[in-house]
Length: 292
Image (cartoon, rainbow, N blue to C red; front, top):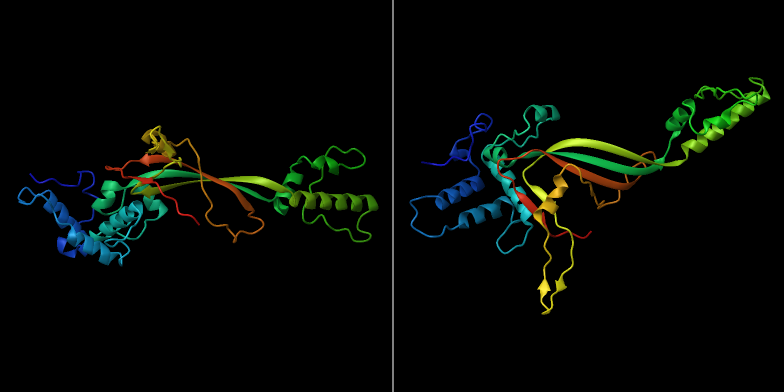
């Protein structure tokens, strides 16, 4: 009998369009697979020429014969082209719809290869405390509030707000004016103080392939003088998605659009946790890194 690439659970959510409406690259890919698995073919090999030409045309010669390209980028591009070519939607669903239909996708490509991963990002910033935070710290009796006690050893610290700044002549006595002046100086000192702030965000996103980072290890020579390529167990590389380990995110470009209140990013790290696995998992081994 004929094999189908769908499962009973995915038939209800997969969009089906007639073969005549497939994109050229989807038609060529479909024809290539049918020729490869056909029991009636009489040749031992299958010519992929039509698919190669369709890829070159659809990518505007970005992926062309004789031109090198990243395998991870190509498979990502190809899956998207096949998804759209067989009737998949190009409109990204909203966050509310993602929660209701996490696998989603609307095509057999997404039903087969799409999974969900939870990403936790912790950004550490060095920034100015700010007026509002300093004001709240004083009103809550922070570490510097003790310096604002009255001269008669009153144990309560009066709350300082924006309206407590009337130091016109005759409005208060000299002691009260001096106390207000000290409050403003302490408030300004706290507001200008540099602090380290951590912000944690958790998002859930979909993926068609998982990118695994290969640690950099230098080549070394054996006793005979030949080069030995170091090996890394797959289990160690997959720890990136164990939901526990954090990995540093390299800032490729300095963020110049941030204001002084946002501060300067000191470090940025992420943790990944797989929530839903696809029917077929594609692992991309990132062996090369671009400079600059």
